[in-house]
Image 1 (cartoon, rainbow, N blue to C red):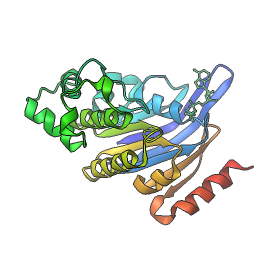
Image 2: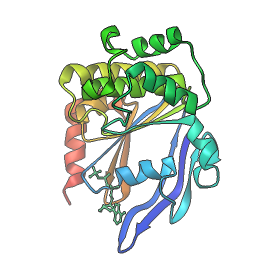
Image 3: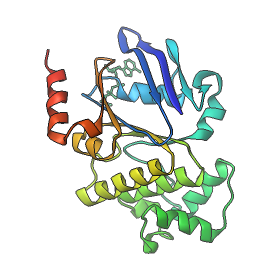
Image 4: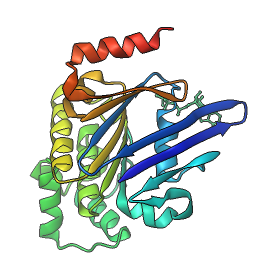
Length: 233
Ligand SMILES: Nc1ncnc2c1ncn2[C@@H]1O[C@H](COP(=O)(O)OP(=O)(O)OP(=O)(O)O)[C@@H](O)[C@H]1O
């Protein structure tokens, strides 16, 4: 579903990504760990087609992102730390709007069902999004992803700033989506969540993927130790 082949990004005077190779199958949850500046957001932005690679290529659903910008976006949903919604519209209206932009028109009952499935409390559905918590906005983001039948979910620090209950609910949603076959690629600082939801974790340092492990092989403490070992010279 998602692939990077020798993917490289150079900014003036800064090599941000040094030839990434990675393949992600349907239903996999890949968690990318790394310090600030390691190249995580650069990787996500290359998959989103927000920036162009200096060399190599990113593929979504077998299509090269740089050459198929619109088509590959149809497969994708993107959930940044702060999900951008229209604050003056309700959750329901935001979902209707973003679904229709993706080419899907739903009845109100269907929209409500998507929001309920994402865990948004029924009382919030018809409230303006400006009054929502961060966790509630993320639930709307997930509802949008599901309503547009995204096969790949890209997340950048989705649980940072969420309280433990909201983060827990968010992890459960991700597991549910991966169980339905969605491929999930998530940049995070949260080793505990990475262990909890990831099928694989990758450790990125200075633009290079220095280690990739199946999470089943490690407990959270061993993962933290592995991470810290890579952060030292
Ligand atoms: N537009 C840009 N121009 C120049 N350098 C950039 C640009 N964007 C990112 N960088 C540099 O590229 C490197 C990788 O940045 P990136 O944002 O991908 O890291 P990150 O791992 O996502 O970190 P964070 O957790 O802080 O978001 C950093 O050194 C950053 O300063």
